[in-house]
Each structure stands twice: as C-alpha cells, then as structure tokens.
Amino acid sequence: MKITEALLAEHVVFHNIFDHIERVVPRLKTLSEVVGWAELMENLLLAHGKAEEDLVFAPLNHYLEQIGQSDSFEHEHREIDNSLLQVKAAKRLPEARRLLLRAVTASRKHFDREERIVFPLAEKVMKKETLVELGKVWMKQRDAESV
Image 1 (tube, rainbow, N blue to C red):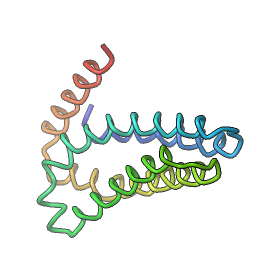
Image 2 (cartoon, helix red, strand yellow; image 1 turned 180 degrees about the horizontal axis):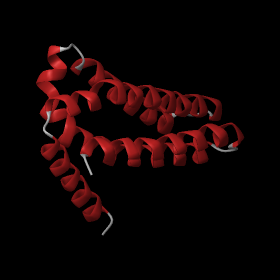
Image 3 (cartoon, one colour; image 1 turned 90 degrees about the horizontal axis):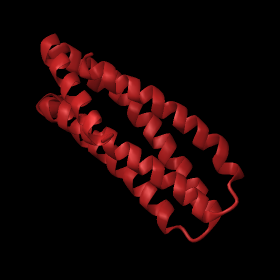
Image 4 (cartoon, helix red, strand yellow; image 1 turned 135 degrees about the vertical axis):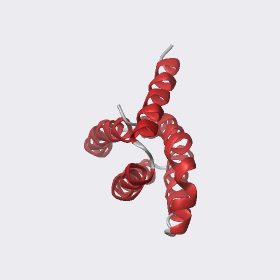
C-alpha cells in the first residue's frame, strides 16, 4: 500500500469521527465531556500528523515551498492545535463547544487541501516504489504504536 493510500484511508476514518463529534457536541452537558472529545481528537491527530509530517511533508517540503503552500499548511496545523488547546482552557460550555467544532471544521478543510495538493504532488514527484516503501514504514509505525 502506498503512503498516500494509507493516509487517505485515515482521512476517511477521521471524517467519520468528525461527523460523530458534530452530532454529539451540541448534546454534551458538561465542560469535561467537551474537553474529553477534544483530547481524543488531539491524540488521534497527533499520531496522524506525525506520520504525514515525517513521511510526506518532509520529503515534499521544497516542492511545497516552491508553490507557496508550505507556510499555509503550517498555519493550518497551528490553528487546529490552538483551537484544541483553547477547548481545554475554556471556562464555559458554549465556548468549549464552539472551539471544538471550529477545530473539526479546520481539520476538514486541512484534510481537503492535503487531498487536493499534497497527495497528488507526492504521487507526481515520488516513485511508486518510494510511496510503497513509505507505506511500509507507516505500517510499522502503526504496529509499534499498538503494542
């Protein structure tokens, strides 16, 4: 499996999680429930983001800089991270809900841009063998995390 296929598959899972968060957040009754969902999302995104950064973004960084996209992807990462941190610092339930849903929306937009820009770029400039090898590295990392 190519790294792009693996990461796209993870995106599908994330979109299902985002759908669920969007459904349950309006019904959550306590601040700690919202914080719990934010922490779950943060932890899941952390592992996914590290794999993307190490296996796709790093090798493509000079290409992304050439097309003026490197800074915008970094900005999006910070926006998502900051929204999730702000959820944990929120003092009121409505604010925490709004911030968590903002993080979900920002994540969806970010994933869409990766799917439209980064993954096709990887497919274009990297050899198929390299993409497959990176997919194997991703699989080994996932296996190590589950132990």
